[in-house]
Image (cartoon, rainbow, N blue to C red; front, top):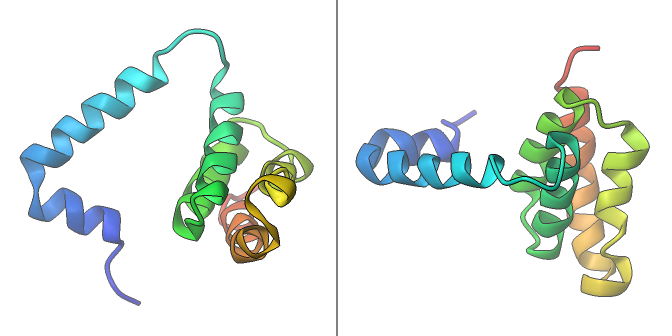
Length: 104
């Protein structure tokens, strides 16, 4: 298995990656939603963007924040009428992978 693409970005472009990480930290600090809800929103956005790797990563983080299996998979299938069945089908397996990678 190859190196994680996000880690490659971090390693190859440390200054740019650092600034990106600062932006992510600023977004995480926004008020109005708790950390679990933010992760569920991210899962829905990543599904709409047809980004299975993002769905997997945010599913992992959502589970760590206390999200249930139903909440995480629900965030994926919420896109059915918005971005289509193919996006949902592309991202459901990744959501399950993210869930399974968290030890209970």
